[in-house]
Amino acid sequence: MLHQLKGDTFPAFPDGDNPGFLDPDIRDFFDELFLATGLARSAVIRDANISRTYGYQIMDGTRISKRDYYLAIAFAMRLDLTTTQRMLAVTSSGALHALIKRDAAIIFAINHGYNNLQLYEFLVKLGLPPLDTGIEGA
Image (cartoon, rainbow, N blue to C red):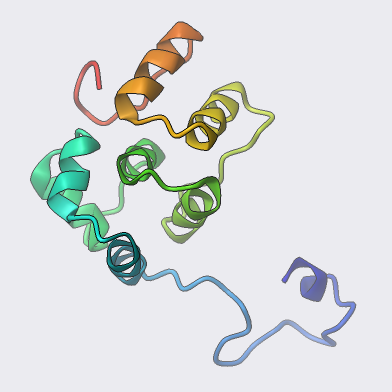
């Protein structure tokens, strides 16, 4: 897509039914993700340490949350980096950047299969703020 936006192959801005843009429908994204992983929403919300009602609301798109909540969900689902970055894009939360120390630590934790508790301990050990999910110590 970036190549197309430079103008090398398209004479104008790509338009039409599906020019390659992400579908910003959060509910569809999470529906597909849960279908592909076979995980239960309730288990993911519990493992992400997010309040039950709020967790369902952010997954169905009725409430927009902050980036840390989506990251906690990604860790609870054990998502890989590509899928986590896609989730952050679909939710307009901002991608993880390897040159930002906290983001780099989160990328490291994703690539090494950490869960939310391991991520919390890792970030604290590095002197970095842990994910804020509204629950102290999680």
